[in-house]
Amino acid sequence: MKKIITTFGIFALTATLFIGSASAKSSEVIEFWNGNKTQVRQQYERQLLQAVLEASVKKHGNFTVNEDTQNLTNSEESAVFSDQRADVFVTVAGNPKLKSKDKILVARPLMQGLLGHRLLIVRKQDLPLFADIQTEKAFKELSIGIPEGWADASLFRHNGYNVVEGGTFDDIFDLLAAKEFDYVALGANEIEQAFESRAAKYEMFSIEPTTLLYYPFALVFYVHPDKPELANRLRDGLKAIDENGVAQRLFEQATGDLIERLGLPDRKLFRLQNPLLPKQLQNYRSPLAEQSDE
Image 1 (cartoon, rainbow, N blue to C red):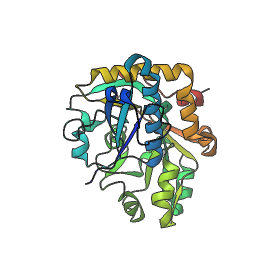
Image 2 (cartoon, rainbow, N blue to C red; image 1 turned 180 degrees about the horizontal axis):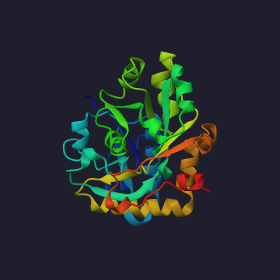
Image 3 (cartoon, rainbow, N blue to C red; image 1 turned 60 degrees about the vertical axis):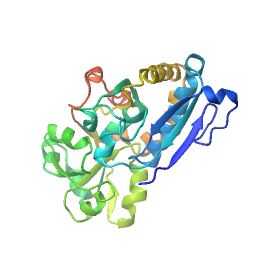
Image 4 (cartoon, helix red, strand yellow; image 1 turned 90 degrees about the horizontal axis):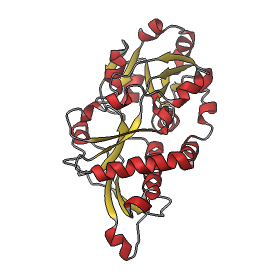
């Protein structure tokens, strides 16, 4: 598959060609893989990395980022640091594809854990069924469809859910239409775009309005094992943008009124455990989940 590479650097507000002077020659060149995700996540993670690197220029110097947005197979993703030559990418903490791989975890969760707030896409004819469900036991009698290789599959199985795993993200709505399973669960931050770009064309699906599944599902930076200096730079930059408010501003730009629009606080809530979390994040919980308990 042909790679699509976009380059950006210091002071760029969007992904664009970095044009520098002599200082560009000493810039740190960072290979950033940003594939296998929705466009809304790609944009947020691109802007976040940009902000993190800009916040660390004084201590760590200038930078140039080569962004690769190609989609990879499961085996290719597991070799993202070796065969694909990436320096950094964003994925869920504890991604099983990286389990046996050398890597550096930057254990500062991104996007306030919103990806772990899962909403459902269901067949319209089944909306009354989901609205009537009030217990976890009843919910587990239904089946969830998950693309092959997604970390969610082992997580849902660990919690006793009925999982049908197979196909790709492109296949999943064909399978839902064929009644191979009862629902698909996607992060609240990406479900609307996924629905519009992939599910709406079937005219038989709906975003289910009453149910929220929650599990601690942190997005994090993983860094090439030979790049500890880059990992330290990301830690410094993340701390800086947390303190100066840039991280919150980027989150609000990415989500807008999503939490209210999708009615997250008003939905019936089913909580799941996440056995995939690495030891550094065993006690992680989304601040949004904390707010919903207040």
